[in-house]
Every structure is written in structure tokens, then in C-alpha cells.
Image 1 (cartoon, chains in turn blue, orange):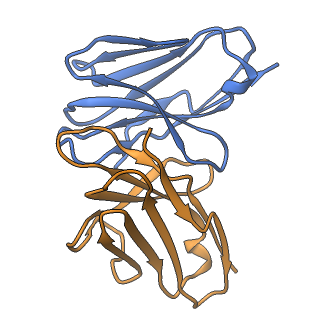
Image 2 (image 1 turned 60 degrees about the horizontal axis):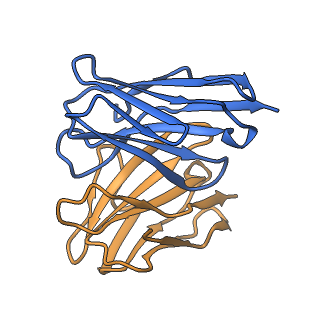
Length: 111
Length: 116
């Protein structure tokens, strides 16, 4: 399968709460990226973390990477209703050439 | 940031007809473009990788005679779904890289194909 796994598949939280999504992948990587997709729309790039990095921050986003466990997490702090979307992790599969997407987590933030 | 466009954004066609989807990089030269398909509530599945001036490389299980890809210039790649069937109904997304060692990949807004 092309895809790694993400959990949870779906997450429903209240506005103001934190949302944590996890991603596992299968091969060695050079980098891992997180994307957001609103329903029926294209992808928005959120953050890239390189294989030699363990944590990265961007605004309300915090991404961690554990290459020994082949896993990553995306934390969205102080969530907002506008954060409602699907979130995908994606890796380069080690080759750096093509991007392989995880199954995604559908986040629903209730106002 | 770099912009990738897709045309059309939505298309409805009848079974047996062919549909062409265009992917354009508007402000950069894309040496490589990728085509993905996405079924409802699922992830993006890579269909093929397209390099300008050469034949596309298809992922396992993707029929190259059904999904024709042409990357005729550094700013345009096209995906033609030939003899479309209802099961081809999906969301098709392209992305583009500017080449070199850049990891940056820019995604188009997607094309919703419905085959009736």
C-alpha cells in the first residue's frame, strides 16, 4: 500500500481544545510533511520536518518526528472551528522524489 | 508562493467519453508533475509521475492506456481519462515541483470528475 497509517481516523473536539493527530510510515525518509485539506478542495502545506529534526513549531502547530518509531504527530493548540478539515501526513519514501500520503485524520472542531 | 491551477474544476461526462484535465504551473517551471486521485473521505493515491518531455511513470495498478498523461511543456501537464466509466468518478489533484533538490511541491485545487 502507498499509504502509511494515521490515527485517529476522525476526531471531534470543542473549540479551544487541543487536537493531536498521529502518523506512522513504513520506509526510511528524508522528510515528512503535514497538509490540510478542506472538504472538496486542494491541499495546503502546513509544515515540513526533516529526518534529523525532532520537533518543529509554526504558530499553533507543533510537529514531532520519531524516526526510530517511524511516526510523527501534529498538535494543533487552541483549536478553532476554522481548523475543521482533513489532515494528512506525507513522506518522500526516502527517495526524495515522490510524495506518499497517509490515510488522513478528519478533524471536526465544534464551536 | 508558487501557484498551480487545474482546469476544469468540475466536469460531468457520459460513460464512454474522454475527459482532459489540465494542470498548469503559473509562476514557475515544473520539471516534474504528479497526478493523484482521491475517493471520498480517503487519502490521495499517487497515479503517475510526469517529467517534461518524457513518458510518465505510472504507479502499480494504474492503467496507462486509460489515464493518458502528457507533459508537453515546463508549465503544463494534462491527464486524459479515456473511455470513462462511473468508477472513474473521483477527485483528481495534480502537483508540481520546480526540480533540483527542492522538496517543495505545490498542489492544484483539484478537479471533480463525475461520470454518468
